[in-house]
Image (cartoon, rainbow, N blue to C red):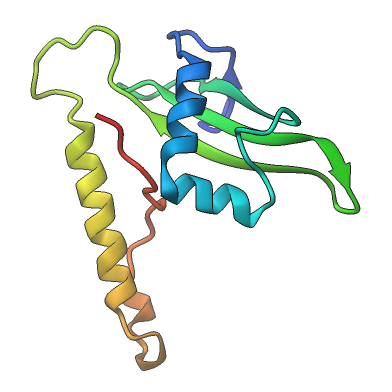
Amino acid sequence: MSSGQDTTSVRQKVDVEALSKWMSSQKSISAILSSRDLSLSRESNHLTVRQFGFGQSNPTYLLTVASNASDSNGYKKIKFVLRKKPDKVAHSSAHALHREFRVLKSIEQYNASLSKGSGNIDKSIPVPQPIAYCT
């Protein structure tokens, strides 16, 4: 049985080299990578792209940044999720990922505003952490 987390080879083309350069230029992504001793500018690290199997009107990809060199903890790697507009958009207001990003950021800020010690933690809304938005 297939789950929503299954990935396949990429069905809708992604320019991996351009994506890697863009990710490297983003302070938020670079900070996350460096905290794990990873960098897309190092030859020993690489970016792999897989596409989630089904169910998304916006193509959704699993990005893995990994090191070819192992340390005492094994190979270092981190995963991100990339969502993008489909290559063919039926209506200009459809697939508005900028709105999705803004909503996720707002919910993240709301969750951060909750006082952790006062029992408000139950009022938090589980959302993925939005890291960067590319126009």
